[in-house]
Length: 182
Ligand SMILES: Nc1ncnc2c1ncn2[C@@H]1O[C@H](COP(=O)(O)OP(=O)(O)OP(=O)(O)O)[C@@H](O)[C@H]1O
Ligand SMILES: [Mg+2]
Image (tube, rainbow, N blue to C red; front, side, top):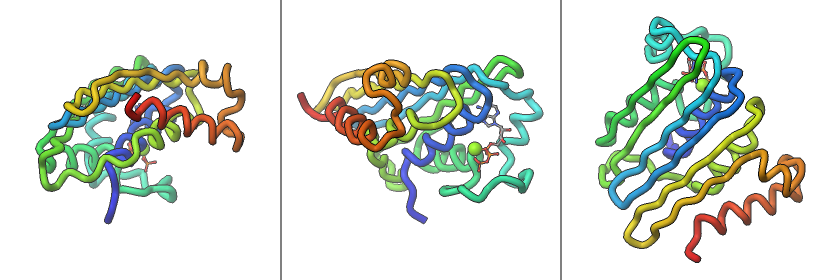
């Protein structure tokens, strides 16, 4: 099956967006050796028992999986990170929120391609649910060293409804321009 690290990130941001969060903050950091991401939400959170179940690939409520693209959410992230010379960390407090972090070695032969980061950011910004979505990007590569931040509410002020076709084209151009060389 072909999938990208971006697919894994989107899956985790979708969990955060589905967890009744008000603000979801996504950090995407990339050096020549490593890609790491953090998804922080202020949603419903999980007890340690709930987190344990969520991490168990053999436990499933079996109800909602029609849209599934890459696998089993959290267990799949954990498995992929561990197989790709990376790691993960999840902190959750019931009623307060959740933070999921994972990192991948970009020098490991099993690490999937990253995928198109501007497209990932666009899909993150369009996820329904949270009042605001903040995406921070930090590139520390030899060829490119930059950081930038985008906020859903600020983009909505400028572009209007992000779901409209016209806004999507502008959003896509804008996100690609942030990523490319100045
Ligand atoms: N950020 C989060 N906040 C609260 N609960 C979460 C969060 N992330 C995951 N969970 C809980 O863990 C469960 C398992 O997550 P997982 O992504 O593996 O599957 P899913 O979201 O139920 O299904 P799918 O990802 O296929 O739509 C979720 O149903 C939810 O109860
Ligand atoms: Mg999920």
